[in-house]
Every structure is written in C-alpha cells, then in structure tokens.
Image 1 (tube, one colour):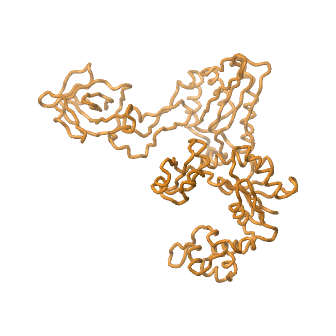
Image 2 (image 1 turned 60 degrees about the vertical axis):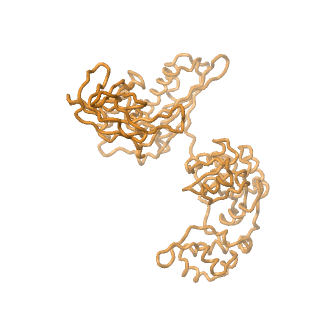
Image 3 (image 1 turned 30 degrees about the vertical axis):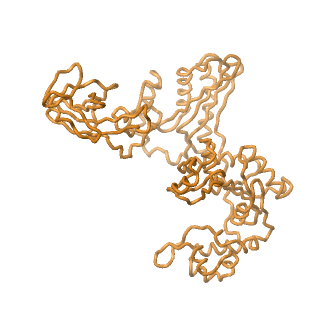
Length: 514
C-alpha cells in the first residue's frame, strides 16, 4: 500500500504564533533555533542559530521556549481531522504524520492529497505539504520538496530512482557509535569518503556498510536503496468519553438537575471502567437560558485519586451552588480532562487502608460544609513566607504558581516560621544609640540591632540574637511592583523569635517562630 506523508513546516513556531500573535517568532530548544515563522526566515533566521545571532538578524524577533507537550496537544486537532477522512493515521512527530493513501475513495492519489489539503486549510493550517511514495522515508523526503498545499508523487517502484540524485545530507539520522567509543556522524563520514549523493551510498556493498557503521548504518543503507523498512504504526483513535444530558423542559432547581443527570454521569464513570481508564481531572459544563440566550458555566475539578459516580454528582451539586447558572438549565456535560489506565492505580491486595478511610471521611465532611470548607495545604517557590503557602480545596490537586526547586536567592533558610501573619505588622528596631537600623543598597547595616518591638501591642525588649540580612530585589523589571527589602531573624531576651523585614527604612514583622 502506498504511503502519504503530511508535513506542516515549523509546526512549533506555528503553535506559538497563534498564542502570541507575533509575525516574526522563533522557538528555541537548548539555546538554538528549532523552528521559526516565514517572516523571521525572510529576515535571515535559520534553524540551529543561537539566540543572540537570530535576534541580531531580526531585532523584533519574539523568542519562545520549546514545549513538546503543547505541540503534540495542538497537533491532535490535525490528527482528528485526518481520522475523519481515512483510518490508520500514524503520527511521526508534531507537524508530521503518515497514512495509507485513500486513492480509491477519492479517485486517485493527487485527488486524495487535494481533498486533505482543503480540509486542513479549513482548520487554519495553510502551509501543509504532501509526499506520496512506497515507503515512509521516501514519502517524507518527497513532502519536503513540495510547495505549500502541493504534493510530490514518487511513481510506484521508483523510490530508489527518486533518492539517487538527492544530496547525501538528506539522510538526516541519529549519530551512531564509531570505533573507540566516539560518536560519528555518518553523513560527515560519507562526505569525507567522497560520496555526495544518496545513490553513491546505495551502490556500496551492504557488508562494507555494516562493518563500518554497524546496525544503524545497515538501516541507513536500506533506506538509501529505497527499501521499505518501516511500516506505518497506526494509532488507535481515543474513545469519546464525554457524557452529555439535555433537559426538555429546562430545569430550574439544582436538586432536580443533579437527580436528572445521575444516570448520564453514572454511565460516564461506567464507560471509563469499560475502557480500563480512570479520570483524575474533569470539566463540568452547565448550559442555561439567561435572558433569551444560552450561557455556559464550566469548572475544572480534580481528585486526589479518581472520580466515582458519587464524586461527580457531588461536584455538580457544589458547582450549581457556588456558581449559579443564572437561569433554567438546559444541558449538563462532563468532559474528561486527564484520563489514565487502571493498571497504574490499582489497589494493593488488602485495599487502600487508612488513606482510603481518611479520604472517605473528609469527603463526607466536605459534602456537609461545601468544597471550599476543607482545604489541603502545601508549599511552592518564593521568598515571602506568605507567598510560599499553597492551598486548594480538598480533592483538587495543588497547582503551584512558582516551582519549589528553584534557588530563590534572598529566601530565609529553614526552619520555617510557625505563624505567618496575614498582613505584616509594623515594628521597630534600633541600635545602641536609639537610631533606627537601616540597610544600604549593598546590604550593609547602619548599626547593630540592640532593641526591638515586634508589634505595636508589645513592649520594647533587648535583642538576644539576630541573623541576616537576607536582601531581595523583587520584580525589579516592574516599576509599580518592584521591592528592595531585607529580612532578619530576631530573638528577644524572653525567648520569642520573629521574622522581620525592613523596606525603605520601615520595619515590619512577617511571622513568628514557635
């Protein structure tokens, strides 16, 4: 069966361009350009350039870091559109996929490529190119020689003839281990041997290629000879697990909505069970009629383990109470956001034990007081003790805004204070002469702290010990939010310990140690 390869050039840059809306944009991977948009390419930006060189050629260039997971998620829309037209689509990487040519259905190979191009253009993918050949490797090279929305077709049995006159650089394959343990680029070695075209490499003896390059070289040699050594690994389209129930007439009471949606939500969880999957994150959408127009209210819910039918019903009830739709409800949808196989979440031989009992008890309390009444806590990155605190309703995953494993220069070392005030309280710290202690821009003290008052309702006391300062220049790039502060740990003669901060000559108490 003939193979059709669909190629969207610079797919990572296309995805980022939709997000940022910039004309000249480049995606970097480990400091080098991985992909760029046509306006950036017209200004001289090329794949493999370092960031500084690319920006020197195109000063208005918008630079983004590579996010493979975002590229793959965006390419799912293209794969879904192709699977609607023909089965057996095999994604090779984001922006590149292969499929059997549906020539009989569309009346020929050229016609099939034209119909697929028209469908992808409807999705907003304008620069899409096609290659058709006997094998995947040759079809990909043919697609790279096509123009936008065009197709290069290699005749049947003509893969070797198509490859014969192509430059040897077209054999872009991973490095292979050479003699002495050194990594050798096969294309570089072939050029040093005087081989400039793929046909010259194909004419070599297979035994000589194996002796020099090993198994990888043998595979490369078979590609050069036009042999089909890789079949299309067709992906299995994901099952549609979304559950939806419509109400006619529309329902006004929340309890009636939950009761009427019970069967559909139970079928949703049952469908996951039959597919061998569990859902840890889902989205509940409620459609309502508000002032003659339909309004959709949605919220994403998370679970520490996975959702049961009772859990989904509880979340729907809470959502209707916390965010009323504003009118009669006409439909409810349950959309799975994160699903995983059962295999990695099965219980042990003796069940879930204490953890499962705790979760059930907390869920009962949460059903009585509401989702926001029971919260789980954690830590996230930051310098301020208040901004390091992280909490979320029980059952939802903690989503830190700042990574915890970063250095965070200026952060006070452990142990952490036991009591963190909701708002810093005014304080005073003075030296031996009774003058307020200040900190210069270089972190130098105007005097040694000798007396302090932690809060306005506490009296003065001598300083028994102190540590610091830990200066922090926060958000210096934002004039409105910039702060230059220094933190201190101060211990009084009564044994009380405090975390204090000085900013612009004014002292504040942020937390207390127990």
